[in-house]
Amino acid sequence: MVYQVQGRMLDFSKPQVMGILNLTTDSFYDGGKYLEYDAIRQRIEDIANEGASVIDIGAASSKPGSSLISPEEELEKLPQAIAMVQEIAPQLFISIDTYNSQTAATCIDLGAHIVNDISCGSLDDNMLNVLSNAPCVYVGMHMDGTPQSMQDDPQYDNVAMEVLTYFKNKCSLMRSQGVQFVIDPGFGFGKTVDHNYELLDKLEVFSMLDTPILVGLSRKSMIYKLVGGEPSTSLPGTLGLTMIALQKGARILRVHDVAESVQLVKVFNKTNRNIKIQ
Picture 1 (cartoon, rainbow, N blue to C red):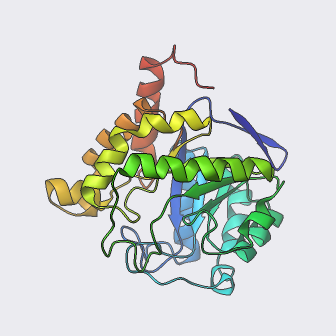
Picture 2: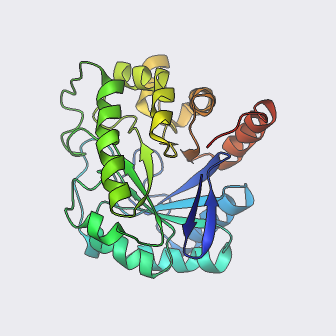
């Protein structure tokens, strides 16, 4: 599947690696690490040099318990970061991690190729209007509740089927509005550890939606709550889960560890070179 974004073609027939740039003080793994100009510039260079095709820039934390922030707060940081990517690594597709439609609209005007929304429009009723026929891709994620409440007591009878039904409805809506849509099942967002593993086990069912699948598994608590440790020790588990996700149809990997993920994708592509993805 190929989408046209800002005059370029974004091809999801093979997996894409999306490197994370968090411009936040409180993200769960690397919050506070990329606040100064030199650190941001180095992170952009590293993401590009290590082989990612997409950079995902966020100015708001979405870890459990985090508060929502305003477009004004996001836009204090994002335009400069977009300009830096365009200068340093113009080959990268730029994704903006936001649930605010004003932020999305401004960043699309500045040249962003992807809007990555943890709420799939539920936190801002105007998001669909902004994305309708826009020259970008929209990643909509499944989240039960808000970042503040999502982990209070998530309940599902069948998490995979409930998330699938959610996206069936979303896909119909997005296509009717001319939105180039990508789904993210939302690992860790309103789900227990068991829910996350059940969702991963059934990930292939989402292929019936004929829409690219993004997964964000990088260093999440579903790993270290199972095996012990903390985010900083969770790279091996991340890579193991990522390979499973690739085998089940994931086509965008949102990651902190770009070089390792690019290597994993190269091995996957070699061993699955005869697989045809629509």
